[in-house]
Image 1 (cartoon, rainbow, N blue to C red):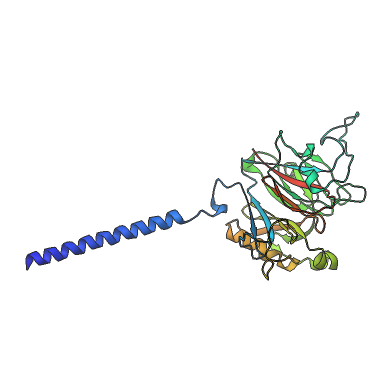
Image 2: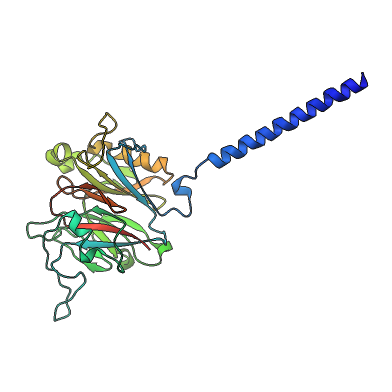
Length: 308
């Protein structure tokens, strides 16, 4: 009887040990399977993907999205505008030349003025409106040099500050910023739909045509953690699109749904500021040697991202 008890106890101990081992193995497997959310990854710099209008990643999504960390030392930035000469060049009297010509998105991301330190951009989005005089309408500043138009103090602009990478800051506001380091790379836009964390349906501000008919959208948003979301919504994109209730052109009342979904699903924080760029015939988005969205109207400026 005593031996039988010892044998039974031994089986129990072995079983318990095996079960404990399985539990440890399962926990370990779960930990390995768990993926670090982008916004919680200290090494995260930039990523491209597509989403539906809930901000969920979807291979046939209508929203083409770039998210990036302005503080990443792996990235750098520049603004390009349509010029007939080399950007930053000066005339005989030492004044910055600003001889504008109309250029489309594909030209502004590939001409001689689009490179930085000899490198081509890895990502780009269309930005400012263009006037009948071919001049950008809003506030555009490229590496500290201003190429601005008549609405530079009235319309909001999006930008990334200068300075050390870890100190860079994304901003959206009207006119020049109080701190000059913030006025380093800025692109004009129009239609501000987030201010200090509060969302506004700007359909009435845009008017009937821009709100409900010219619905190709291009926009930027900033979160309270300092991350940036660039988004172009375009049903005519040159890639497969599956149109459905949650995967169609955006109306202004749905801007918050998609942006907050992207921010939440990627641990980027809460949306604080949001701005529309030139829409209709202008939206363009480029990433890693491929133009994902391109329309064929001239535009005022592009915002360019480079990998060091």
